[in-house]
Length: 344
Image (cartoon, rainbow, N blue to C red; front, side, top):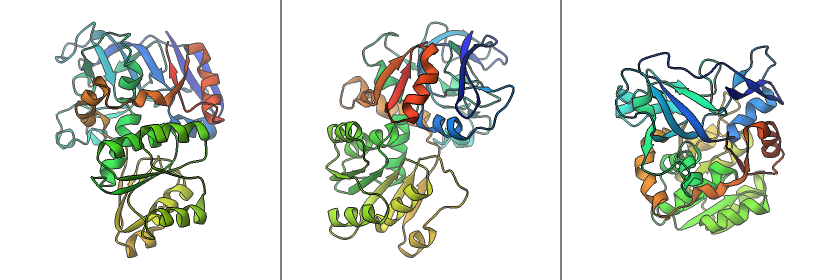
């Protein structure tokens, strides 16, 4: 089968790789009908050390189940399914707590050990706890929004939950990528009164406003902090969604939170230490978040997608075939595209 293989920073190739096959009785094989490139894929695209073996990329997908192992009970051949970016057994104590990204038998797609979904097919370990069956056809018009449930919509929602977004609160979203834009949707959905988007790209800002953003801050650093404080009566935001992962974005997120506020971090941190920890400490700011357990959120978010109350699929502004994936990485890295959908 054909798949996207990254051999090092900037070195993305479409190659023939061994077919996805059932290896364990808990596996399923999914024919990928839609996948995408994630903002987090851009970190290895910029920094991955060269290797001779490479890794099959991609951790977000919708597809059709083609085969299942002997122990799989919840999905069968022909089912249309969402594949969250992490696989999980659905039965361990962390899965029971809705934290599937910490499953004791789980892991992540698109690693050296578990090939990803920017491919014609993908092997899904722990299929019963991972895959979510959809009651729609494979070419349903809602597919773009349904695809976001595999990662970015669930991740934006996780940031909002971690930041304790609620009715009447002021919210600031740091980052205007797909996750940040979905964070705006999540904040609006959870009842925020004021939603401030921090970003500089006009197409993304327009989409953020369509999703419910009430204010825009184009500045960065100290100027951004000052501007957010002006917009929140001098106090800062009740809830801040950090959707980038860089030191500056994290520091800004903490500095624009009001005392007693909360920051939800979902941008993959690029450094071990967290900046502005003293500010967080002395202002009693809660800093929470991490890899979003999107499998736990699908059931909650799905009705709003199916009934058209939210349209997160609008973050996809380019659709490509598998052969075009290397250029899709380039387009996202150079900010020509917000988020690229792949149709193998």
